Length: 285
Ligand code: NAP
Image (cartoon, rainbow, N blue to C red; front, side):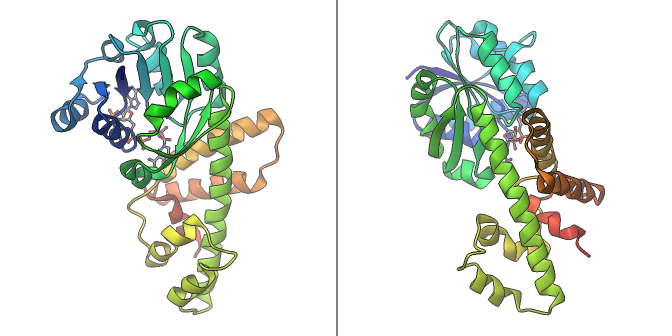
């Protein structure tokens, strides 16, 4: 089965690691706040370690799910980073949403490892249920080696292309979501101003061409003004920042994504940085 070093037991990482433990894998765990790793080990097994380096000792698979580029760099290549303890041929799977540039750089700079950038979509609920969509970038060999582990929490696991292409696919995902959430916000804002029965409306148009995951899962809570769950605006702004940087580099034109990024900045100014992305409707008076 191999020993897995798992780094980052947050909202997404913890349930992923739990699915791996349930599937019978041995885990060496590291989390910046040590209590989370200790708590996980007490509940689900595994060994809580003091540094990423220690977690990687004796492991032949490294899985990370941390925050941004700097965090990934720190836990992999940093002073007490995991890479230095990994043997040649080890598998490195990164589930963090980061730049495609860093994903490519890590793969290029560490050819002795099988690197896979594997960002996810499906949120906390998807991670808890083991129902994530996982977009992978890396060699076919890295993908094949990773598949049995990703199966523990992935409903759809797809190799998109070489290193960095998992992150680029995640960016395409976020571009599509940004536009849909703004469209749904405007639709519901209009319906409320027009005095429509929104329950009846959502029931009707949710079965037609306007149907979307956002409509199925968020329209009713948007009408109720409930946003204290889900995928945080702060994380979406991080992701849209990556999107807009990549778009500048590849020459794509993303007027709506750029606008929605600014709208999310408005939501942050309203104090809603930790609210779900559906809170975009809040800035419509
Ligand atoms: P989170 O709850 O903040 O968890 C991040 C984890 O990484 C925390 O346990 C944190 O440690 C650890 N960490 C962060 N920076 C670190 C560093 N420099 N060194 C060591 N450990 C570090 O975030 P999350 O929601 O799980 O998201 C993780 C990744 O998945 C992000 O890249 C996010 O964009 C992506 N993602 C999230 C969602 C979602 O719905 N939440 C959906 C899709 C993708 P502490 O416990 O000390 O804070």
